[in-house]
Amino acid sequence: MRGLIVTGTDTGIGKTVLAAGLVGALAQSFGQARYWKPVQAGLAEETDSEAVARLVPGATIHAEAYRLVTPASPHLAARIDGVDIVAARLALPAGAGPIIVEGAGGALVPLSETRLYAEQFVVWGLPVVIVARTGLGTINHSLLTIEALRWRGVPIAGIAFVGPAEPESETIIATLGQVRRLGRLPILPDLTPVSLAAAMAEHFDLMDIL
Ligand SMILES: Nc1ncnc2c1ncn2[C@@H]1O[C@H](COP(=O)(O)OP(=O)(O)OP(=O)(O)O)[C@@H](O)[C@H]1O
Ligand SMILES: [Mg+2]
Image 1 (cartoon, rainbow, N blue to C red):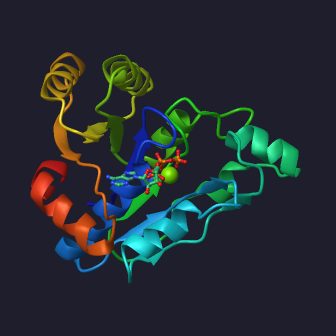
Image 2: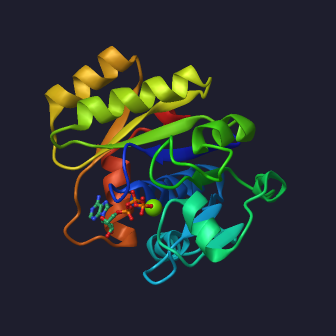
């Protein structure tokens, strides 16, 4: 178990929270687990690394390879910030325990002017967890994401839903997309390290993911 990449069907849908949940669950099984957000675009709000550190106290958080001020797609944020995103700086950081790597936005977000995240996933060589909303529109977004990843040869570990239960949508996505449904994280009114760890334990079977 080297690690997993967390991508999603959209921005702002709970990738970081789910990634934090995975870091916590893996740390329980492996003794330690790590989180890495290679490119953070937008520094005005709490960053994804800061959110994971808050939700999983004690987790190993690797520093971002790029911290871009502009809240935009990484390729554009880099251009506006006057930064070149180069492949050499995107090598997976070494360390003890499995690593959770979070993309930005979704699979076909440009990481640079010449590379999509999905293409970088192939380079990293880790299986991908797709995070998807349960609400209206998710079937199309989820199946599009699955197809785009498969077409580029990215291995898919499964799909993790975030939101209120929508069993019909979740089932048809797993069936037609031929992906494993890993679980569903409900919206937690009080999102804390304790409530997140409890929800992960209740709604996800780590053996499915591994
Ligand atoms: N299961 C949940 N319970 C409660 N709040 C949640 C849950 N999932 C996400 N949120 C909240 O929704 C917001 C967006 O979530 P998150 O930052 O994880 O999205 P994201 O997909 O990682 O976004 P980005 O594309 O910007 O990285 C955050 O304020 C987060 O705390
Ligand atoms: Mg995030």
